[in-house]
Image 1 (tube, rainbow, N blue to C red):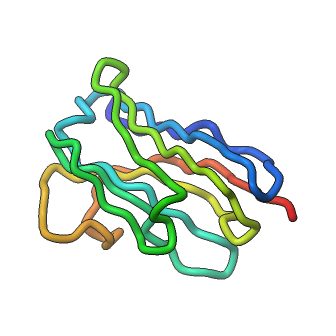
Image 2: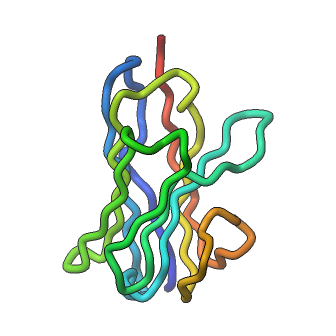
Length: 125
């Protein structure tokens, strides 16, 4: 069964850190460009970060640069999102998503075909 499964969400105080995991099964995750998106209640889904297919090159939304880091462990078939200096406005459901090609941009959620179920991140003030 082809799927992405997120984990690592939870409740954290402002200024704290979390590391989210996106474990792939049924596919080799390095063959996918993998992105992290988030959606807060009442808001549209928002691009967070992406890592290219078969590459270590990464892309970030401007508001996440310097605080969030996306990485991939090919041996574990997993993509991570390290989140530091968390703010209450980072509260959202975080999703990982995959697509089987690289392109000039990575922020459009409709270009990703494989999605996880999401993991809740709540940052308290």
